[in-house]
Image 1 (spheres, rainbow, N blue to C red):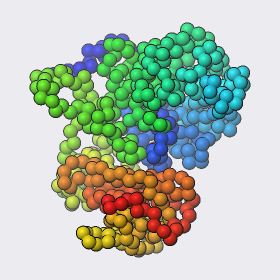
Image 2 (image 1 turned 30 degrees about the horizontal axis):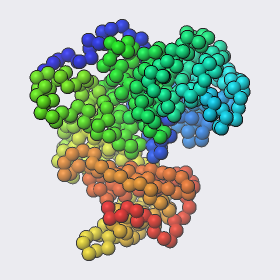
Image 3 (image 1 turned 90 degrees about the vertical axis):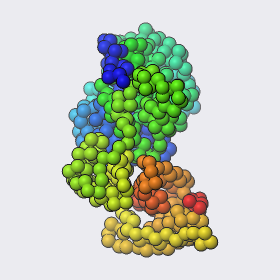
Image 4 (image 1 turned 180 degrees about the vertical axis):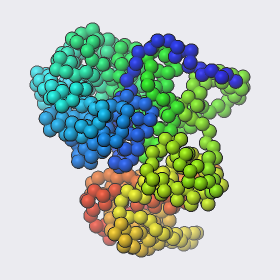
Length: 533
């Protein structure tokens, strides 16, 4: 077998530095069902810092008090990458962004305004002159607070090139050090987008003073292709998200950009500061936190990315791995799931493995996770890395609200109406017990939890999958509910799928309770959508 990576020869070529701007916590979280708690955002931010991204766009501080608090927490606690906050070109947004970012070791204010004709006419109802004036004023105002300012021309791909060049010239003169050219609706195709970048490099005054950035959406499946075409045309920052999550069809995928640059350095002539061996663990963390699973055939980090079933492929791989692999699994941190700990393992060994997985826990969090690990190890013969990741996320979920599941008893069988009895403990010490029936054991458990908490949570989506392999594998349940016109998500992990589902539903209830927007549940059942699960 070859001992040299398939990409080392290409990496010997001199390369420019490509800035990796991660917007998982801002644009990625805007996707339906991808909302994260403050604790989850901080965990993802720390993972992104370990991954080695250059910029973390932590959120939109003016959007809500919650967004402000999470950006401020990340700015205060995460070191390494530049921490960025998004703002519209107005004083309130910019001031809030700076207040949130002020604790950061390195900060950036990212201001934006739409420039395309369709946005100017129907969304902003502004003339070209008014858009230009607001853009310049926004950048100048941001520079009063922060020396590192990025400007984005929203919907740049559908903006008249001459006007776009005029706006970008003006904001560079006003002090923008990065100019971002977004394909906001995923409309461009690679050749066209590359031509736009070349045009701007030739026609924008002072372009040499700024980094040219791109932010591509995947509506036509070309976000990565458009971003790479822009890099070949001279862009030196790519805005992307882990697993490509984001609004609508998503964003440019971070892991695909990083490995394309690494694998084809001979063509792209750029390099990144990303530690590619952290790509797979970071991908799995984001998937577990958001509940958006990585497709098996996903490039770079999917389960099938390095699988070979065809006989001719297997024969070639046995002769030399580069016959059918342009990357190695270990290059992205993907090793086969392996037994790491058992029921006799101690706290020290557990701590070491948690650290190796890139999971940053304080002593209290580690204690909770270790107790859950010992309980799991008593039920499972083999404990895999993915089990440990799920345990950490579950221990986080257990602390995410006022209610905790203390006990549950399920009755179900052929010819029997399914029923569930639950005991929930509130943070104030009160214990509530309720019993309910349903179309299936999961529906019965959900109804009993509603009765015990007094919260109406209308089920919108229910998804389950296995975390690891084997008959004793943990299951992951993801539940999306609606309450008072807002959508909440919960995740649960357990070897018992009914308990995993109940934990997921209870986490969603806890998130409703944490908002203070609780309305009493009605007398009628509304969780029958769980059906006979």
